[in-house]
Length: 378
Ligand SMILES: Cc1cc2nc3c(=O)[nH]c(=O)nc-3n(C[C@H](O)[C@H](O)[C@H](O)COP(=O)(O)OP(=O)(O)OC[C@H]3O[C@@H](n4cnc5c(N)ncnc54)[C@H](O)[C@@H]3O)c2cc1C
Image 1: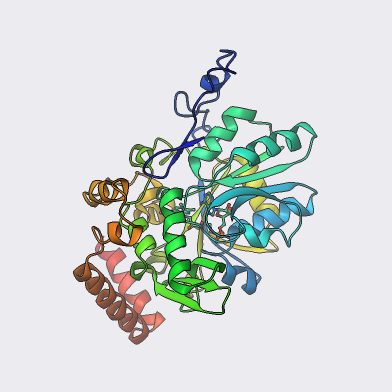
Image 2: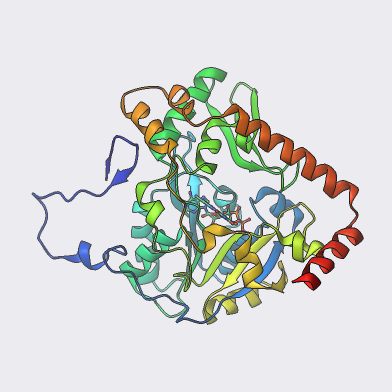
């Protein structure tokens, strides 16, 4: 894999070793996508959360991923997911063989994860007859499915509602600057700390010297760039794996807007949107019932509050400005000034405060009444 000037890794064939077998073209999910595992059926949608509140609090949404993973581990299987590297300068897929190992996989890392070693290890585990749960972005699942085939229940897959993946090179530069500013290496990083609730996520970083950094998501320069779609890989803007049918057995996301239709499932502690796309996905979800609360919901409602479930992100104008500055050697902090708009930040902060006030003043009964009136009008 060779890193380009925007900090993304691309495969390059070593011509001196290539035997021209054509296998790389055969398994490429972009040249030829795998058959969608759902066979065109409409996914069943659920609002879900892990029944263990500690696991739920440590997860970015409702902790549905951990429930699926625990189920597979309990059956003697192995789970693959994304983890920070030891120095927090990058993200790669690793294997979890025990429940303790799952802690590193928990939580969204908004950076492209490397799957090179994990794909090789998953192939070995499958060849040894072990059950594998592989979780990742839809394009990663498509790549794995092309590599190993469907594997009838031995390979279970779970993809994310994916917004797009930011540049690993830009993330590493941002982390170097963070560590220089705080004069110590990182010991903890969380893109979605829930100390103030799921609806008000904060970026939290802890340093080896005991110092802590915390910002609202829009107040942190890197996460701000991710949320504006500025730092994404070029292919994410034309992603062919958004929409339906999905490529994985189960799809996980945040059930944003759940309170507008189902206020009883919005307690601000994190509600996952879980889509069962295949019979194997249904089976795994049912087996998880003792650890995962799930209530069936309207797929169209969930999709109307989560645009990236059905369409890729649009290219913002600021992308070219940021990467021109970055390529010309500007530091991350200087290049990021191209997209950080004080007025936008202020507007978002005010909207948050007003929304928070309104929700706390209106009781659940009134919210239900408003929702009832709106539905009747429609
Ligand atoms: C880059 C990215 C963009 C996303 N965009 C959206 C979105 O627009 N809308 C939405 O509803 N949800 C989005 N999500 C998904 C959401 O943030 C949660 O990851 C998801 O809801 C699972 O949450 P959980 O509480 O079940 O489990 P958690 O424990 O919070 O999530 C862990 C799972 O996420 C996987 N994961 C974490 N980081 C990565 C990564 N870099 N690459 C691949 N897999 C990763 C882990 O392997 C694990 O399976 C995105 C996630 C990522 C990583």
